[in-house]
Image (tube, rainbow, N blue to C red; front, side, top):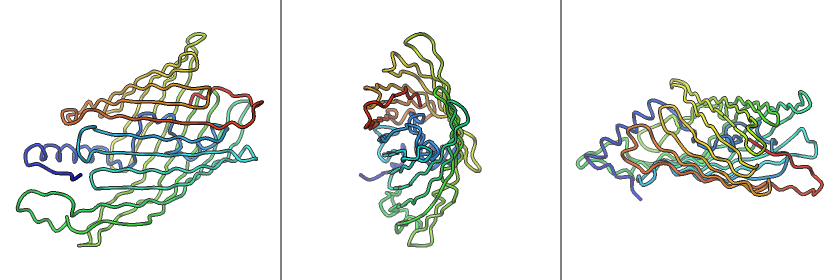
Length: 312
């Protein structure tokens, strides 16, 4: 499906896109359910489940808008026989118009106990990104022949690596990470056109769980995102857990959106979550919101293994 820029509406939308990119300068995908998808941005989160498991997430941003961002993520993690070490990997597909990013990254974490329940994990991430952008597919204004919209940016392999720290107990966590430490430029095969498609991003996240009663818990969390030459963006969420089965809550992303979050837990193994974002910017006039679906499953092979509730 072609990303067509119509003269009237297209000009307004293009200006809004440029304004949004200028404000946040952010290429890494964003997630409303970030507190259950931390491994994609912090390798030290690997192993926190204390079991083998996977997570899949699909995010359709700005629904009903041709060329709107689409993100698909698959993550896997597992502890080794040495409980201090855990391994994992992430596969991320991110698309905006004809601009596509496909990344594969492996994760390694090492855990140090700081007390009876407190654990500090140190993580490393390494992998590559494949970036492509077919410039000739863009439909320009009639009579316009822009030499920069010729050829295709197509780099099969761009390696990168990242680091992270993750401190957690049963009812709290704090993480610091930079998943991509290298800044990569992607160049086209025509006229030496280039774009800075990978920038260094920095993340700080945290959360707490409070008991409000026998069957109700309250979990506030935050995620702070920063990139060079861009203002800091903060995600704030407040979720309630009912009978260790149902999460319900809301979210706020500075200068961007508010949202609703729900997740159902089946036997502490299978989790299915849904989130909806409603834009609080002028972009709200051009789309039908953002939808995000997440599913995760933990494989526990030992029946005698005592399962502790997992809140993050």
